[in-house]
Length: 385
Image (cartoon, rainbow, N blue to C red; front, side):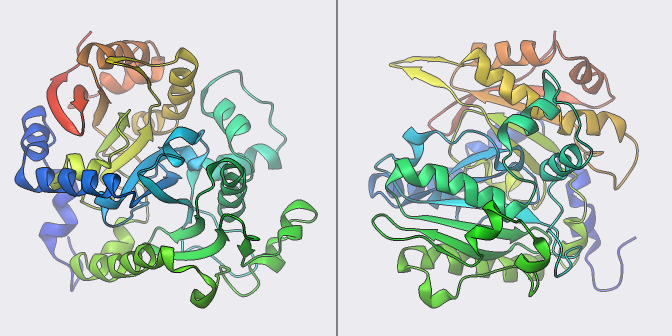
């Protein structure tokens, strides 16, 4: 039952929304999707997109999808394609960490990102590195369990090759509020709201977070980031007004669908009605190799992605039938590539994993394969072995 002041139809919507092939196709072919695709392409031609490197967590949300290319991975630990960041259509890059603002306490490391939490546990207990799976991915790809430090280290790597302005931020995923704490500008010394020596010599959360989440003063942040920052502020207000129970909705990560896609255009453009609902999609980027009209996927990159998928799907199996537990609502898995046969091959590889077999055998659960080109979904089918 909804509490006083909340709207029952909003509270229950995510559980009732229909996500079948015809729903996705109708959404993708809608006038809203067409308009968003057109705006995205205009921004790309004008060199006004930004590259967003963020966690695939369903609670991590950014406004104006027509303004960015999205590169999502567990804890934002995946490799960022330098060709995308340096593309002429991209004006700047944003590297985002996220945390639970309701759980944060001054003087302590921010928590709330599952992948970073697993990194912390592995370091704290000196766990051996597995040969594959989510533990292997975390050990190899996540530099630090602190979301701000992890984002900063990733941005620092890309700054050396991109020659584009870069902003590092922390997002409180409970309301979407962001805190910009690092700026990299070509030909200038970087600016940080935290002491870099603290990161490399004596990481001490008591000192870094003594006064809360560090934040650069707006006056020292270059104007190139103003539109992005203002849009994020507006999104917070809109989310809290539209969903009176927003903070509770974002307490536990419980998406309806996991999306594995080669598409860098946001799912909120391709499926604006479905994907725009807060917390409904968990997204992982699947890198592709394109040679003319031929599209393929490097087996090592595919294995890297499968290692990441071992995070949400086993949780969905374990928590099936347990309302309000993480991933208990996750009953759809969407695989998108440029070719339906390639999507099917990815699905077949995933179906070799025992945990995926268990998920597929749960009542009402479906794996969907899609052929998507230029953000237009041409074919959507249910995958069956």
